[in-house]
Image 1 (cartoon, one colour):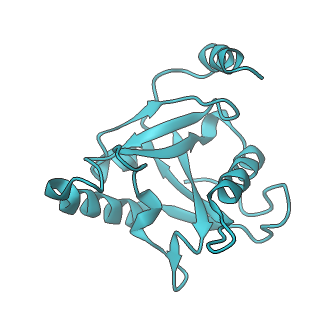
Image 2 (cartoon, helix red, strand yellow):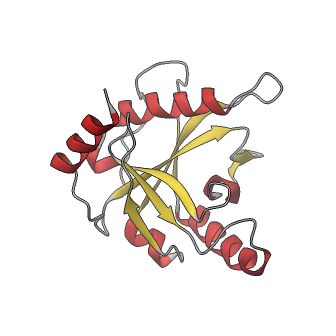
Length: 165
């Protein structure tokens, strides 16, 4: 599907405004986002050079679609020296993200994931002047994130508990 077709479908069916109660899914990879079985703050690291953390608006997607996308992300992020695998989902709402200190959640559809959005955090990892504030927000997000581990990561379909907050 072309990028313009993806954009059109997204604009037709997914509202631009991200509601406070919307469920936002963060794809969690292992071993990257976990240490000793606990979610690490780097699960909410912004994309290099930006204040943006990719999330998916679950109210406009499905658990199965999210799992397929997460497995693609894990495969793309892996290398032979540094393999990564899909581990599960982190679930928050826009309201919780803002309470934790996120500036906003904005719609950012991408081809293959029209429900994609960006969680805007207060700065980038590269900006030392605000890294303490960013770390605080990441720690708050981790403490409020409901983690759903995948009981069968090799299956294509989500077979875990329903993602509710």
